[in-house]
Length: 162
Image (cartoon, rainbow, N blue to C red; front, side, top):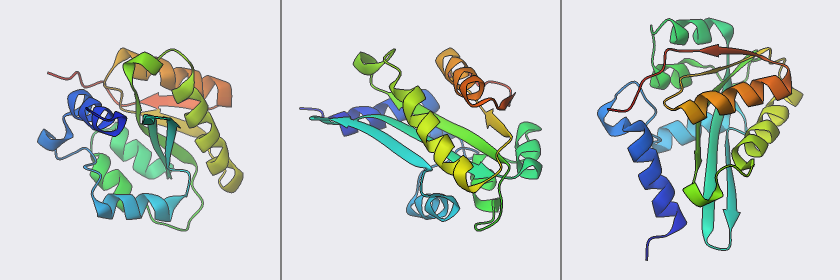
């Protein structure tokens, strides 16, 4: 039997195909450590009795790095690893939101992202949220999150999965 965890991993691979794109986060141990150094609310999950059914990944960074990312001068890997820990951040990158199909349209991703964003905003003067959406649903979710938080939303041009 395939677990929810395995299904979320497969969904991530199908949606982002990060193994074939060196610009994307590969979620190595080094990536996890860097995320935790930036803020404890960077990774969120929602679980039921069968395990995780939704994951949200977002992290704080600087406007300078955001602008470089949006101009496609750096990728996600550089964005994460060039963000220095322990400074004041003024923007948040909504990196990914994954929800198993039978749990979609229940507001889970929005609630997780909103809670994580508010936790980060307690510690940092965040003014902007930005994305690199791979799906229309990702675009809609980001617009909803930014609107609810009263933040400007900036976007890197969408990359459609081949």
